[in-house]
Image 1 (cartoon, rainbow, N blue to C red):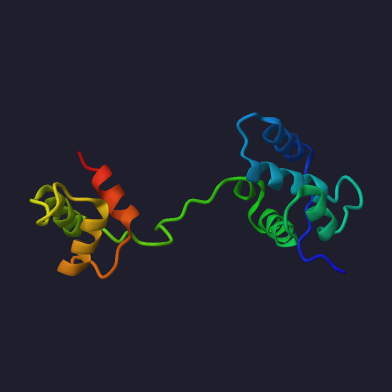
Image 2: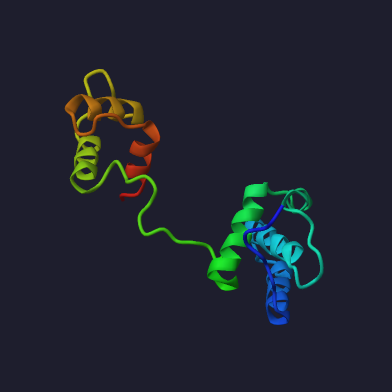
Length: 148
């Protein structure tokens, strides 16, 4: 099978990858990427297949393909750095006014028959009042925890 993306590491790049690989603070994901690059290096001889590399590194064949593609198209530094997204994958449910209304509700008198607000009571009341359509207990708890 013909490879679409080839990995040809220079001596400096191999040295850099090995430094990252042997650093104590390197994450497991980054170690896996370093191992994939070292095994995929065609400058060191004929590399194993992507499936063999995946088995030896304990990653999927897709990971091997993506690491090779990133190295070939974007370079070593981009391949070995963690990508930061501009926006989070899921926008927050509670922001600004909604957060203020939940906090105000938590500070108000609890319903009749209760001595204080519980997270479950707050969740039910927030949905009942229409502050949000649906919300989980954990979201309510974190909203209250983040405020003093």
